[in-house]
Length: 166
Image (cartoon, rainbow, N blue to C red; front, top):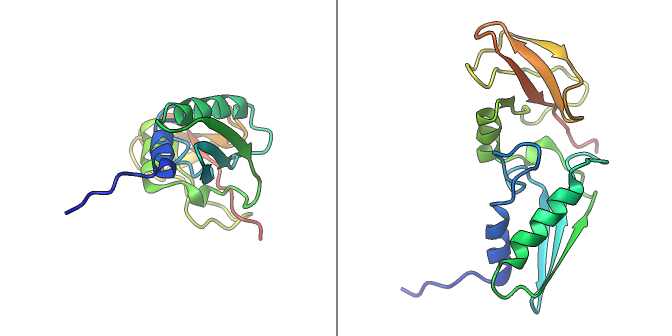
């Protein structure tokens, strides 16, 4: 059996698994669904990334970390990172692994296939209870809210669902 080695694009994508969100250190930008495309041409790599929110203050950090990870891949000569807004990033892009990592960090993941404007069910990331109250819709960042679990008595954050508006 012949085992084919990964091509350069696959190696870059693999390296991006180690690039963590600067605000949520347990989850990678791949698991958040932020990488839209990786294009490679003769050692030059263009990485197209979707910001989770327009105006995210961490984009320069993400760009730096993506460049460092991709530049460390053997065969990569040049890296460009472009933030694109089409398609729009939605919370449905978060992988199952990403949702588990959010819980480990103490953040309730967003529900799948949420319809904007509709209420959503939020379970405590610590005990799994749905007996929670919204303390403040405005959390420490634009993408999170602050809640309180009435079962285990822990405060926690929840990632707000963002759905495709089309």
